[in-house]
Length: 220
Picture 1: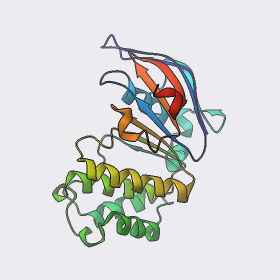
Picture 2: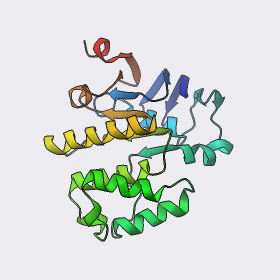
Picture 3: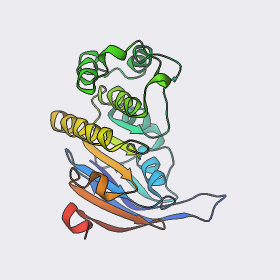
């Protein structure tokens, strides 16, 4: 589905360098990218989403190099949950209408189903910023999952959540993956947070992918 081949990237103003990353994500699987803060997880996700172009190597989408010209079509099929995009002062209903305009594939019926699964149906008239951290996480996932993305990239989606909400959100994600046959790549600091649902785990350290394999092998 999406593949990085010998991808490297360096910020002009920083010494950090993401070095020679190669990985391939297949359809319908959950991948976890584990690493300490500053290891390069966010940078790699942004490269895979096309926010940054690689300095060397290439990102392939369905076998073709991901070019700037391809990005509008690619972003209809891929979703990135990282930097908050929504209008925090607007209600859930208003934010959903924004997505409906931006993404022709936004499925209002499926969105309503996701809200029900997340326990948010009665909060549609609530401004996003008035929700709890866990509710915001579920709402943002519902926004993006309602687009029926083929690829979902998630940057620290569990940060700041209590254990109950973490369990709820992981179960919510598993259900969506099973229904949609979607591919997920989730970046996190702790492999133990997602070890139960990940099919494959990668470990980043100092800009290098030091492990990439199935869950049992990678966590050893």
